[in-house]
Length: 114
Image (cartoon, rainbow, N blue to C red):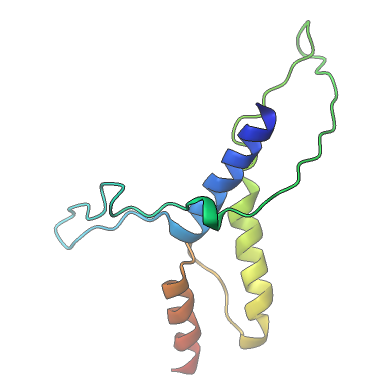
C-alpha cells in the first residue's frame, strides 16, 4: 500500500509539473473541464522509481503507525523547476510559473531571443 501511495504521489507531482493547468476564456469560462481536455500523465510518462523505506515507529500513538498520504507529490514540482533552472542557467532564464509544458518551455526559450 505504501509503495502505491508513493507511486501515485509521484504521478500527481509529474502532472503538476508538466500538464495540469486550468484554462479560461476571456469571459471566465473554463475551457478544459473534462478529462478529454484536461491533460494528465499516462503510464508511459511516469518513470520507474525505486522506493526505499526507513521504518521508524511514531512516538505519538500507541501502535507507532504513520501515514504516507501525498508525500510523493510534494517534492516533484519544485525538483523539476530547479532542474529546469539549472539547465537554463547559461541562457539567463528563470522558471517563474508552472506547469512547464513543452510549449511553455519553447516560449520561454524564444523570449530570450527577442
